Image: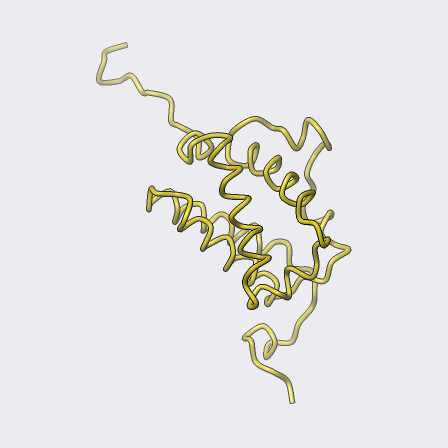
Length: 146
């Protein structure tokens, strides 16, 4: 194949973010923010007091989701993330709080702006998919019903 037709393999988001250490740092910062920010209380209260188990599971999941080792699948089987979140009431507020923490963690941990925006878009889709609570249009818009 002529050199101009050769394509280098595209790096996965896992590789572009910096591999295992960088994914762990992102997840650690994400949960630290969830624990620290008063505006994230709604999503924080859905978690155990000790966030260590959640942190490890999110790291395992993100490793494979970002194109790295499929650690979550190896340990727990298929993620079925929405089904695993069904026991928790997740609405627009919880989604937005989760995304706030992830956006801030991405801003602090991912230097590449294009990668950061791409990851945030993917996280937004994932977070929206986790919603499982029916809400009125007023609540979806963040307004209080009278």
